[in-house]
Image (cartoon, rainbow, N blue to C red):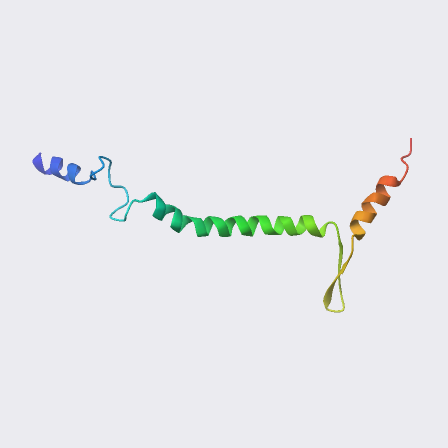
Length: 89
């Protein structure tokens, strides 16, 4: 019975809580330092394509002659033209 008590008390750290880090340092600063690059990359890879879709919706983008051609605010002018069309009653 003494062996089980000593084994359970050895797993408790000096701060009074169980050591769940399995020998690794349990510091919140290190957690954020190691997790933040992955979170930043995930955020960028999810937000940048959406921003690109939003911004290119205001331009007319065509692929011709093995290159991309961007023509001003053509899509925005098209939206204004569609809004100006009278509706049938």
